[in-house]
Length: 167
Image (cartoon, rainbow, N blue to C red; front, side):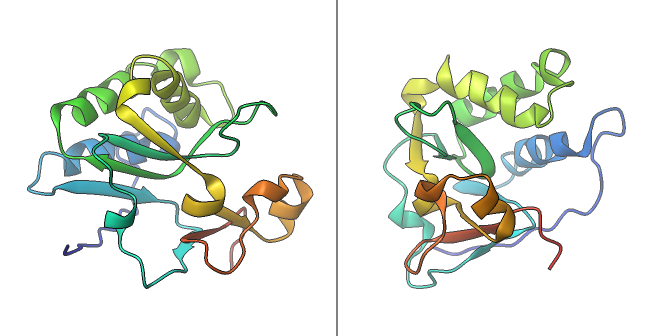
């Protein structure tokens, strides 16, 4: 499996909060000749270089980290890392997420809320949710302060998300 790395520095729709740019970018990338596209936050890094993305691919259209798979603590999908198969389902998913802009725009993480609504509803059967520990593990003081030990990075995790860190 070959990889390309795309960096986008610009807000892609000046009428929307920059958070929405990841949805717009993913949608644009699905119009290109990629089998899969992945978004990863700027404050996240790969830490398991022995594993490729194919480790996570199982036939779903949408792959996302979940802060608590059992939902017992009220935490849910974290779109800091999202992997999409290049298919009609993923394209429609992103269109539907963007369609929730007005409903979600006043939330502190509006695009993440829109993603969660779609993943937990219409796209539930097309989504694989991985524990944050595997797919988007938290690291740093902020991560420790939010008291979600089941999400804290440790050696062997695939992606380390250095939450709210500038370094």
